[in-house]
Image (tube, rainbow over all chains, first blue to last red; front, top):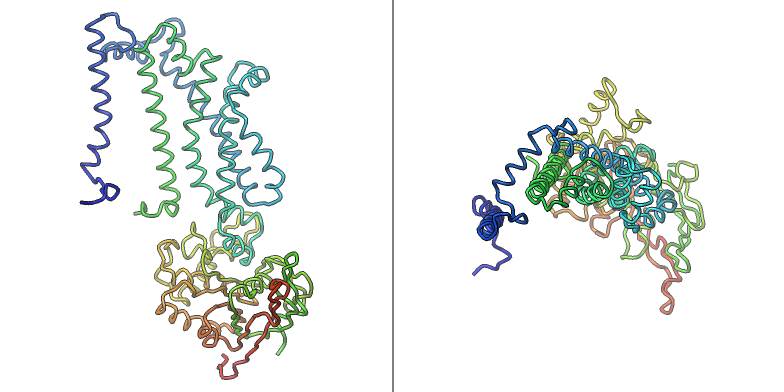
Length: 273
Length: 244
């Protein structure tokens, strides 16, 4: 008898293993929803698939006469703009700070404690300060994402760069490279796949910060909509929205992974063709 | 013969621990010096001194008649036991690295005809170390011996005054090690290199070097073993080596 930890599913069996829980979950939901609707036709907590499809049609296809636009796309555009701006600023600062802290002992001594201190502050606790300082507009929401994910990304990247074997750094110097050339040609390329990886890991927290900020003060956005319709127990809108957010998150994750594999094949050994 | 590298009364101390004491020696241009000694005898410290990763606590090290800068530089090439090549660059790019840093201070990259000339030199160097068929391969796909060949080519293209080898063949299979012995001996003769090689393999030290230095403690205090440092206790010139 083989040990449990040596049994590796492959091909079709792996696919079936992966999809089965999803199908079971969907079936359970259908059963529960049907049973509840048999008891109470006005049931709101477990809406039927039909009810959700109707709502999706209203939210994603029909123009809202009050705003003149389609709510789902308007919300998606607003949220992605905030998320994109926030994550771009965070990634760019993480790259610069992470390279400096990871490579230069001077920068590590100067910035390390500051970054460590900022990293332990719960970002949501800073949100009131951001609303007071930047107002209730876009800036506060973007800054929340930046503050929320940058310290993690900086520390992750700095740690990765500091772990580049000393031999490589010395070898670079014996080949005549300056500090700048070592940063540019030794540290930066080795930082990029890790930066993409840490961006992937930061997507989750970034969504949390975005939706929190939108829930508290906003008039458009995926998080705003979910919290708005919560007042009417509109699970038939909330569930499709949550599914849409999950789909977007998975798509970004896959896109980043693909970019990393294409651009930095050496960083994905065993995956290279 | 003039002394290329000379140590004058060099001491290295960490706190009250003495690692090297009263090291006096000089290395002539064109020498192949093997450095042996038991673990903890300061072989690595000796190499770090020459590399400039460390400065002596007392004493002077001269390279080419001028005091050595306590910082690695392009006058001293190095091949470590591991991690000597850049994993994100393929073989040619690894060898090009030094030439590109020399030719483009700001971007660290060469373009156009300059790049073509540099690439030709890099390819010729790779062919000289037997990697002519693996130009576009990343280090992770090269065997241990081929990675060391690449590291040697990468160092040699900058024509260093001294080539430092830190246990360069220590992680290789016996057969591959023999091939590498042949390669380094040929390169030493052809390019009239000056080589300092640290090894723990005494046979290798005598086979390759034309001079063998043994580092060890001359004195030993059983109650405070750290108070006496190592120095060159044996210095064998091997006259029978044919020099190119």
